[in-house]
Image 1 (cartoon, rainbow, N blue to C red):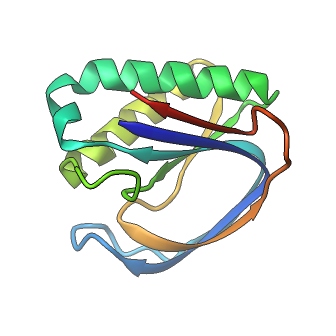
Image 2: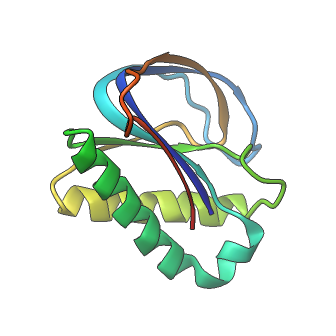
Length: 136
């Protein structure tokens, strides 16, 4: 798994077009303030250890959120951090599980529409821990 975390004063998105044919039809636009955005890429080799990868990802997201003094986390599928790609259905399952676990820990959690190319809007400060990359 590759995980790029960016703290954003403002993160906005709007659905543009489907990138995964099994994705439900969604037309959505949203803006979220003061959030840690996780750009998450699940790789093929992660499928065999999905539970362990999920736990490590959640720990990293919680740590980065605390460092950036936010309780808002956005889960965003970003299949551009590696050439190896996991099954989209497993990725969606990972996101749903992570959302539930993070909410149970007191975080406000958002998922960008899965399986879509999105128009993105960002306003991110230049703080030292506002941009973190982890390989899990």
